[in-house]
Structure formats: structure tokens, C-alpha cells
Amino acid sequence: MLRSLKKLFTDDCPECNQSLEYSSNHLYYTKSCPNGHFSEETYPHLGVSIIYKN
Ligand SMILES: [Zn+2]
Image (cartoon, rainbow, N blue to C red):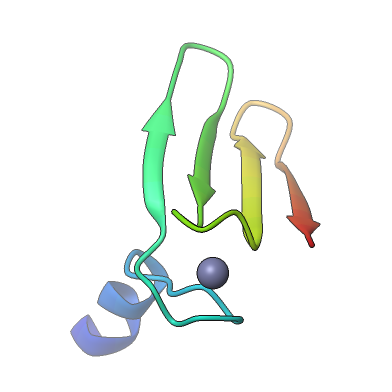
């Protein structure tokens, strides 16, 4: 259980397997590939995630 929880928070880029970088502000947080392949914006108050892939 702990392993699968940890997996949720240690996502890797599906393209290059780099660890995704996190940032956040008061509206949403983002996870993004340092090489620009992938990014995900999550809006916790809306229960919405938006995923961008190149
Ligand atoms: Zn990548």
C-alpha cells in the first residue's frame, strides 16, 4: 500500500523516464517533464486534472 501510494507521487515522464518536476500555486499544481514531453495540471478544488503531451 505504501509502495503504491508513493508511486502516485513519484511519476516519471512516459517519454524519457525523467522524474517529473512539481510546482504549485493557490489554484493548481503541475507536474512536468524537465525536457518538455509531458505536463499535468491538477485543480484539487475542481477534482480535475489536465494532461498535456507532446
Ligand atoms: Zn520527458
